[in-house]
Image (cartoon, rainbow, N blue to C red; front, side):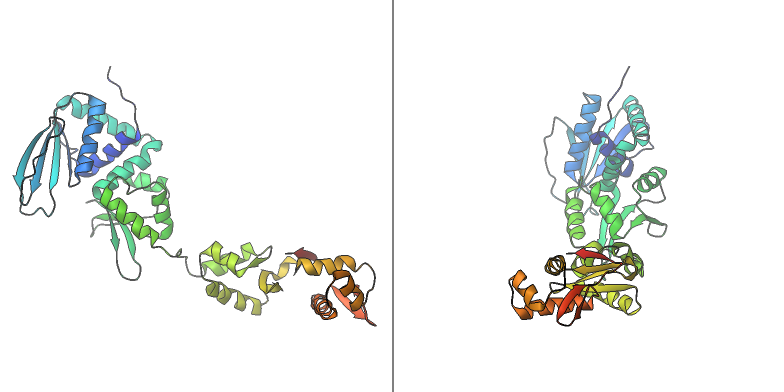
Length: 339
């Protein structure tokens, strides 16, 4: 009874074969590609599965036949004037092995753990990366028509796509989709595509949100104080862009800001918070009884002017008041948040 154990190399070769092979024939396992490293990878996997095999490799090039010696495999060389790069056709002639191989590929379709490896192999065969003006970055998977297994895998990884009948390919755009494809290393099997994928991916500067996305979502982050730099990191936008959103919201009374150590901290107006520095908190802590500015400056070991400035700032926040040279706390129903 013949059996096998599915692994990522087999799943990758299943993807390669379905993309670049002849899956209709019943007499031979065929795989075509212009990357000899992939041909070699396919051969080693076939050998690991089936043991002693006798494949043939047909090499087609525009000129200059290249003599190779690999594992006692028979090479045949042909001239193809249309070939910009040498391409190879790998063949194993065996009706019984074809039946076994097709059963392996079918079993891969039922194993979700193998989806990412299969998709990586399929992309190595039929995928490409397109770049253009206006920072256009597109991943394409060439096919005459949609394939159920590719639809199923893309949906499994929550990758949004369209299928272009005119372009005869799956079309994938958007930073979020690139992130998900980068996570499963979709291009890493093919050396040239791997290099291009990671180069283009590294050029992304920011996420492309839908219209008004930041305006509609920034309030979710302002239950507690956040400065512009923190919000800039959260949304992947410049400081100026975040400020352009916050200032009109402040004018409409939706948010307020508190300046602490020369940094503005923003919160919802409805959050019922007063944001102060740790220095101002110390003034409040020692103000257990009415005190003059001089008394406060002595306790804090600072000059009179410094204490007077801090107390006036606390007065503007409604936390203290002054009566006959004496400062005193004011009871409030707001939470004092210290930064």
